[in-house]
Image 1 (tube, rainbow, N blue to C red):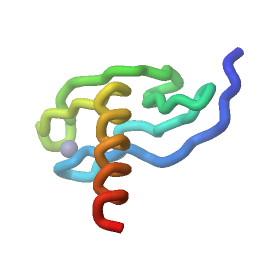
Image 2 (cartoon, rainbow, N blue to C red):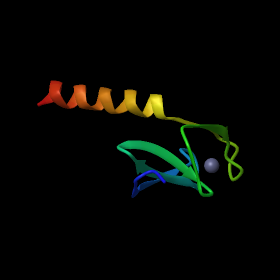
Image 3 (cartoon, rainbow, N blue to C red):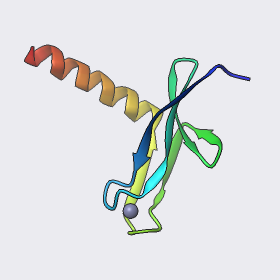
Amino acid sequence: MASFIGTKKKIYCPKCQHVVGDVVIIENREWLKVNGIAVNVMRGVCLECGAEFHWSISERMLSQLVEHVIKLRDS
Ligand SMILES: [Zn+2]
């Protein structure tokens, strides 16, 4: 069993805010947890509003890197 650290935050549909799943940290990496399954990529369509949904580890890591660089630049 991987070292499961815990739920970090919820992931919502970007359009209607319907809850998609949770971000969990397992061995220092973020995963998306949906119905008890940790996934590294998820794409699909929200059944509440029809919005396209896409989440992936590689994009999350890139997004955190960019946020970090922006913070450094602005400080
Ligand atoms: Zn939605």
